[in-house]
Image 1 (cartoon, rainbow, N blue to C red):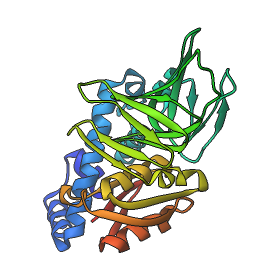
Image 2: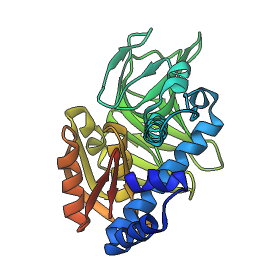
Image 3: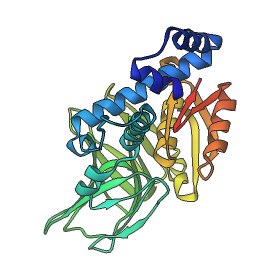
Length: 295
């Protein structure tokens, strides 16, 4: 992170530039970690430019030293990663990175949120609708034949036909059933799918791929403080770790994202979780300030 901030100044001396290039060329992981840090800083700048609340972060540079300017830039990047104001304004129920709260709904149904999850609710005389804005939630539904219980998540719509089910919204949308059944519908021209107890589907909106399986219990492992994965992609696993832990975890190369991971990951220890993932795939972990890179 130090080299990144010094390069942001644009005032490196020739000797400093040579030292930096020597450091970057000394090991492949140095170059990859630096590139990942650049991507995160670029994402932060974009977010700050697009969000008026983030743009309000103090950044005056007149009369202050470069270390202060550098610290402000780091603070802005960190703020981009953890800032939750707009989502908290929008959501009726929300959880932080280390929270899994349970909410009782007006009809007596309950919803438990996984970490970094946000949900809105809209109850009317003829239906009960919840919208999963991000993250994952587990629903236990009170029966009411006159008012169907519906959960909307991205391009999917889940209607409870029984008692308990789990919905996850990320790069893919996962629906799993722990009791009775649900009906899963899609916003585009695809037949609805009925899931019975113990079944699960994974739907990827970008590709239209739909996979149905029988590992519904694995999806509920987060409620026991675990991430249980069976042949899941590295990108899926890192998405889950980023929702749970502070800072930002990045994958250095696109070619790594599709690598498959299986096992039980304890979600109470970031270092242990990263160590498990890295060892299972033969990767290295490099940390630069709040950024962790898998190489």
